[in-house]
Length: 131
Image (cartoon, rainbow, N blue to C red):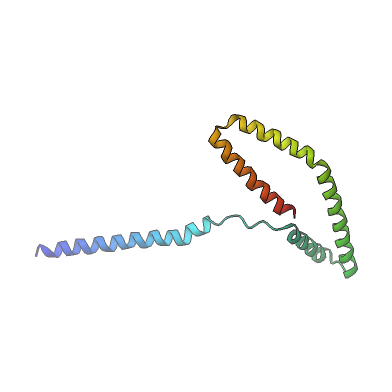
């Protein structure tokens, strides 16, 4: 007779443990997946341009000629922006180098190496973005 309560307690503990396990797995699957979703991938300039043109065509109800004219205007404007960016790039780089120098002054040597690596990675991202 004393064996029955032990089986009942064991069964109850087993059911409780399986409930905890299933609850934890369910929480991880249904809740944490949604929360951990990162930012959407960054679009390239070409993709953004296409989206912008498409939005303009739909919202303004552009005809074919207006759409082609809009593409020419955007191309010409983009070229002007590139010229201005290139003109001021040396000044902007000087400001960035001054910033990096000041940051390096407050960092420890091991942090400086990590900071230099971070700067290289960001420069690569910028180069890909400018293409």
